[in-house]
Amino acid sequence: MLDKHPNDVKLVVKHFPLRSHKYAKKASAAALAANAQGKFWAFHEKLMENYQSVDDNKILEIAKGLNLDMVQFARDMNSAPVNDLLAQDFRDGRKIGIRGIPTVLVNGRIITRLSPEVLDDAIATGLNKGQPK
Image (cartoon, rainbow, N blue to C red; front, side, top):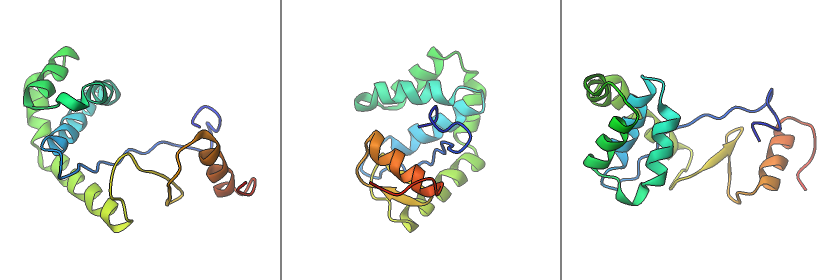
């Protein structure tokens, strides 16, 4: 969708660490810490590849594998701005009815059936360029 609508669509990532996953909040904080070093997407990708084995050691392994400055990484991961952002994203998600991940929204509307066609229709409707099928 980003390629199809480069001037009309943007991807915004919000963090919604599930309480049922022991390392979800730590993984989100780590991704934000990696972002401070320009490696958010690389870190995120590695987290998703290893989602079943994410723990403290895996988070550190990913960070080291991406050649992050580990002192800065630890500092950022535990910083007030990172933790405040995580808390705000979680509150915002609860407020709009997010219960799980991944959740996709188009113009504030939760898309319940994820497919390219459904997303394209939602985007077209949001841009007033068409009607839902």
